Image 1: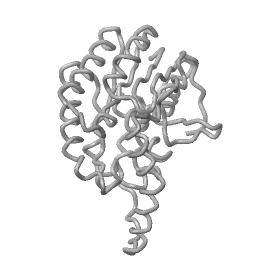
Image 2: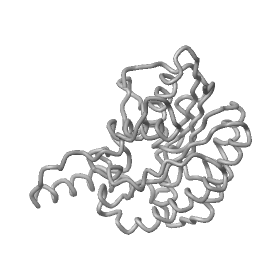
Image 3: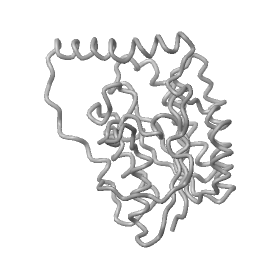
Length: 259
């Protein structure tokens, strides 16, 4: 039985791009909280989400770890690293140190900690193929941190379905609603919740073949709609998380909407 779940991290933990129907985002953390609550009927689960989009691992440790510890969770997720990978100053050793420190601190405070590795970005975003080596290095660091801390590892990056473009949103950086639900189901299984299984690993049906001009049109539209604004923002030293606050800073009982 879990009493309080606290999630820390960046935009994927915040829930982008999984609309909640009320102008915000739901996301795998909200969905995972619902899985946990359903697994313990009659037992109240409180949930807080301190994640903010655009945060690097170092900033998550500096800004979110202490507030998370103050909430005294007995269940926590720590997912970070993608924003570090996208920066020229990526230092896998520093990221690994921050991840391990956060895991150890939360476990030392009495929490069961769960995290996951990152999917291969190349099938989702071909332009990101040069970043594959960084993702692999980060995933090794995540595995090593979990082995050292005792955190539960969901090795999401080891499953090809995690990189199926149909589970990713139009921006190719965030899961869509179906992708977020897959991650939540995977976390529920990794946590050993009753009634869970490995069905989340099942591949999607083979997609229809696209003509070359359709692929080119989609790439140009993505670059205009997402890549260019992202580049412009980062050249100005801006972040999508500037002046933002956590969506759920205080623990509150988990509502159980339909999955």
